[in-house]
Length: 150
Length: 150
DNA sequence: ATTGATATTGATAACTGTTATCAATATAGA
DNA sequence: TCTATATTGATAACAGTTATCAATATCAAT
Ligand SMILES: [Mn+2]
Ligand SMILES: [Mn+2]
Ligand SMILES: [Zn+2]
Ligand SMILES: [Zn+2]
Image (cartoon, rainbow over all chains, first blue to last red; front, side, top):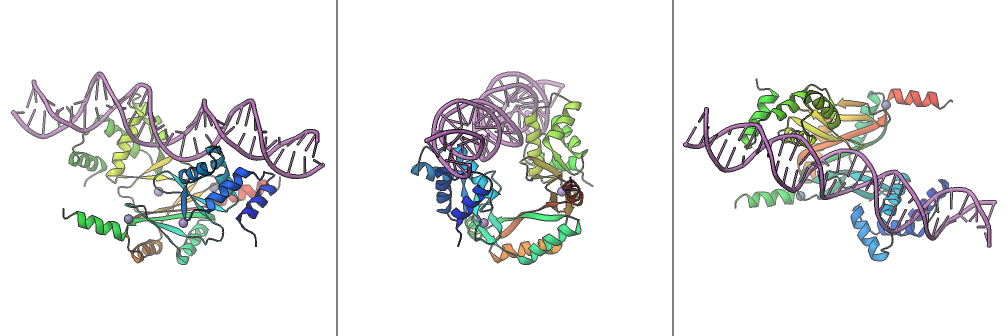
C-alpha cells in the first residue's frame, strides 16, 4: 500500500518537480506530530535535526503537501496557519474553545448534506467548506465560575 | 427608536471613550455602503471627504464598532478583512464563488440548531460560529466550459 | 465658561506571517 | 557524465494591521 512518501514522490514526479532531502525531512518531521501543527513548531524541530534548512523551504514544502492533498491548511482565529495530516484522515470540522484553544473534531453528515444542497440551490458547484464552532469548554467555564467568587 | 449613532455614542460613553468627529464620519461613510466593505474602500471614500483622517483611526474605529456589535468582521480566503453592518441585519452565513468572489448570503435554521447541539454534546457553550461554503457559481462554470473549447 | 485629566489623533515605525528574488547548488533524465 | 532546470538558503519585500508618541481634543467637574 502506498504511503505518504510514495504519494508525495509521485506527485512531484508528475509535476516535474524533484524529490530532495529537504522535502523528505520536512515530511518526516511533519508526520511525527499529531493533529494541528504550526509552522513554528515544525521549524524548531527541523532546526534541531538540521539547522541549515531555511524557513522558505519549509513554507514551500508545506504548500506542495497541501497541493497534493496530503495536508490541509487551516487558518483559525489568531492569524497563524496550522497544518493537518489529511491522508487516511476522514473529513471533519472543528469546535474550538476561545478561552484555552482546545480543539475538538467532529462530523455531522446531515450538515454536510445540507451544505451541498444550499450550494446547488444557488447554482453553485461546491468545492469545499469551512465550518468552525466557537465556544467555552467545560474546563474554562468551571474555572471562570470558580474565579468569579474571588 | 435608537439608531446606530446613538448606540455607538452610548457604547463609547459606557466605556468612558469619546465621541469624536472622526468616529462620526467613519460610521457615516461605513453606513453609506451595502454588504461587505473593505478597509481600502472605506479609506478611499473617507479621503475624498477629509484627507486628513489617518488610516490608524479608521482601523481603531472599526474595531470599536465590532466591539459594540454594530459591525461584524469577516476574513475570507484572500487575507483581507471585510466589514458588514450587523444592526438590524439577521444572522446569515456565506456562499462564495472562488473564481469571481461573488458572495451569496443564506440562512439554514436546521444547521444552526445542529451546531448548538454539537457544542452541547461536547460540553461547550457556543459563542459563535463561522460557516463558509466555497464553490463555483453558474456564471463562472459556463464561462470556463465555453473557454475550454478554445 | 474654564479647567484639567485623559482619550484621541495622525504620522509613521514596527510587527507578523508569508512570499519573491537571486545566485549557488542539486537533481534526474538523456 | 552531462546538462537543462528545479531547488535551495539568505534575505529583502510585502500586506495588513498594530504600536508608539507628541500634539490636540473631549467632556465631566468645577
Ligand atoms: Mn482537525
Ligand atoms: Mn453577509
Ligand atoms: Zn477551554
Ligand atoms: Zn463566480
